[in-house]
Image (cartoon, rainbow, N blue to C red; front, top):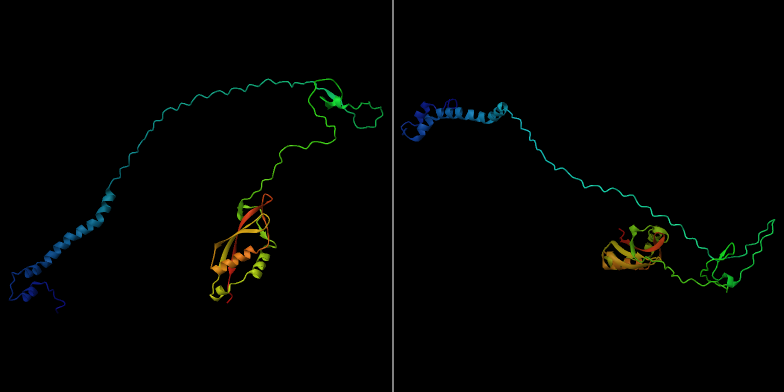
Length: 276
């Protein structure tokens, strides 16, 4: 019965506040609570609906005014090009006729040729006649020139400077040469050489140290190895053993640039691994 009763009815309020001061604020609040809740609902409900529906109604009835196009006029001054100079025709220089000067020549007897008609006999000129003359097909007078007559049968050696070949002594990187330097027999022969000559240091083997040592060296033009340096090491004993084997290596086939041997820098990893 209590669950179906309204605790805010007047009979319940009178029962609760029986023999109590009803002028106290709690009785008045409970008596007027129903009317106050109703007024609050009727005030809040329209505001709540207006809050969600109002923006949609405003956008629906709002007239869209098209934006006025902006006309922007850019004034460009008249461009005046500089006057073009006319191309002047090239003046051809008058051709000079070659100056031909008659030079004194002396005819020498030609080689023997068998013909049907007898050949003309040309006498051999003397040394004095050859001085100041040029050898030609016929003998005639003209301007004498300075010549040198060799009478001893030996020619003088030339005095010109002999060009010495330029040797490229710079160190090239392996990626910039035409022919890479290579161990005699290829990489298979190099692997056999490493296996036969490389010794695993005892202390490093006992401590279980292993890894790859990177050695840098230069293959010279004669195939020998120089400038052996450590690029990346593992431990002292492994590094020294790797460098020892590289220094002990026989000659390689040198790298070439434009067909000529050159010095090439080479990087070689040497691996130390312990079997399980």
